[in-house]
Image (cartoon, rainbow, N blue to C red):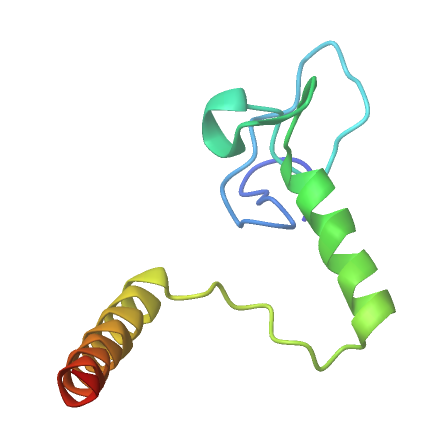
Length: 98
């Protein structure tokens, strides 16, 4: 639903503002808000831009590509564990070389 009561953004699902009494063309996306996604150069990143980017990704890489966000917390924990293990191996190998 792109207009009227209960309309939601086609990208993020947030409720859309009511239609202006002066008319205008309704859009299926949230209005531009620099506080939400930030800027890319001089442009404000919008839900419409992100939708276009996702479509381009599907066109380039196929529809089976995962579109889920990377869990940076889990990645950081895994990297910390790996680096600690590598540090331990490096200390042991230095001890044998001396």
